[in-house]
Every structure is written in C-alpha cells, then in structure tokens.
Image (cartoon, rainbow, N blue to C red; front, side, top):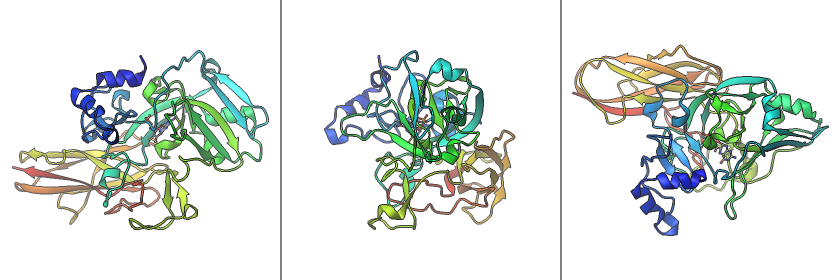
Length: 388
Ligand code: MTE
C-alpha cells in the first residue's frame, strides 16, 4: 500500500469527513488538527491532499528531532512505487562525463555528516498580518537532524563541471498530479560545491524514510527547505538559474518591502536562499496557567548559515530583556536550544518574548517583513501565560 493511501487510511473520522466535503474544501481541514500517521504521533496536520505535517513547538526539546517528529512538507504526492534496487541518480547537463549512479555506487562514496536545521520558507505564514494564502503553518515547519551521505561536490567532480555549469538543478520523483508543475529547482554551483552540501541518504543514523526523501535527497544546509529536493533522481548542470514555477514566481521575495495589493514585477524579486535569524519559545505553552515558583522558559534559535550569538528573554512584554542560557550542543547549521529560569514576582498575566541575534549581527525584528507569499516570518516570538 502506498504511503498516501496508508496515510489516508490512518486518518481520523473527522479528517475523512472533511475529505469527502465539496471540492474547494477538500484539503481545508480544521487547522491544528492532530493526525494519526503511523510513526508520526502527535504531529499537526496542515494538509492531507499531500502530506504536510507540522511539529508541535512543545517537541523542540531535543537538539536532534526524532524522525517521527520531524515536520513533513510535500508539494505533491510522494512516489508510490520506489524500489531502491531500481533507483538511479543521473548527473548531466554542463558536465564533461554524464554519470548514472545506483544506490550501491552512491553508498561507496565517502560519507559526510551535517547537523542541519531544516525550515520551510513558509514556516510561520499564518502569523503574517494581513494573512496570506498557502499552507497555514504555525511555528513548527522546522526541525533538526543529522543528515549523512556523500558530498554533492564529490559526485559533481566525478562528472567534471564545465565552466558553463553555473547552476545545479534537482529533480525529484514526486508523482505530479494533473496540471501541477513538477517540483524542480536549482541552486548556484558555488553552494553545490560547498563541502557541507550533501546527497543525503541517512537522517539521524538511519536510512531516510519515504516522507523525507528515500532513498536520497539534496541537503543544502542553512537554506530554505525547498532547496533540499527529496526523492532525488536527476542532477543537471545549467548555464543559468532553472526556469519553472518553484523558482519563479515560487520562493522569491520582493527586492523592496511591498504592501498588500501592490503589483510586484518578476524582475523586482530575488530567489530565497539562506534562512533568517529566529527563535521560538517551546515552553511554557501559549495560554498556560502556572503556579507561582520557578518557571523554565525555553526554546530553540537558529540563523541559517550564521550561528546564534545570543537569545534574550523578556517577561514584561519587551520592557526589559535578559540573556538566556545557550545549550551546549551546537553545530554550524543547527539550532541552539536555550533556557531561562524565571521567578515571577507576583501572580498575574505575563507576556513572554524571545529574541535571537546571530553572528552576522542580525536580530529578530519586532514584526516580520510582510510579503505576498508569507515567506521567512521571523518576528520576536511571544507567549501569553497566567501565573496564579
Ligand atoms: N522535494 C520534492 N521532491 N518535493 C517536495 O515537495 N518539498 C520541499 C523540500 N524538498 C519538496 C522537496 C520543501 S518546500 C521543504 S520545506 C522540504 O523538502 C521539507 O523536507 P521534509 O519533508 O523532509 O521536512
């Protein structure tokens, strides 16, 4: 049984009732509904037309996210029949010697590991005001894992990149429904040749699961999740950026801030690459009612290709800020867990904020830059709690 059918079979009665609703509503599930996908307990269902699962922020309590709690973002159906013995990866285009590799051949190349925080560019979209269309992600389209596999550059060097090879295109084996354009994107050759850019076959020490791109995916560390193509089957060197829906108009930002309704010309936009600086409070939960005493405020912070320099916490709605303690575990592209032990002075309602600053000097802004597709939301995080 393919994973989509399996997934649908496991969905709750309410979700299936919604699935049977009129066409326009077929994927508009009540937001925030929990779904029982095998091995994916407690995840928040954001779409069931294609599998889109969000990690509840309460799960941001381990440096490495267990694979079962790692968010899933699919633009289309996962490949239904994928036999690792038949799988091939082709490398062509602007190269001296086009290659085709089997999984066994790929596995014989030197392996490299990178702990990477993968975040969907649309993470936090539901928090933009005014609201924008698209999957209404809350704060949890982000997770961290140790990805392992051969370096992309080792494979590219075998094929011999010609001087005309400027961009590296990835194509996955998604099942493309109807008129939906295929999920094909490209990255500049400089990033492709970086020693940390991988053809990942493993996640947290185990072979990739189907949801995360089995048998191999690109891993473009520090960049928006869309750069890391799953179910990779073709790599092609191009002399220019790939032209297609998921490069333009998809995954681009206006060069200047725009207002809702403003017309944005394609030539006034640029492709999204590295992630912004950001922190999220994973506890206490928004709306929590706590007894007076010690309150552990904690969360995670990340900054794409930069490192986290500090995280500050405010327990008085931004009037004063105190540095949080950064967790020991860290790696270049990985989030940093942080915590702050707070003793509320008196009972009452409190607004707790977290604000991260990175080694490039970027600080989380008080409000995010609005854009028509709701990308890269990174405003200072906030929870409201009651202390009794
Ligand atoms: N690769 C393919 N082939 N198809 C997709 O839909 N989604 C992308 C990327 N790679 C996608 C893909 C997006 S938008 C994100 S955020 C990440 O995969 C999510 O990776 P994950 O599902 O392993 O968390």
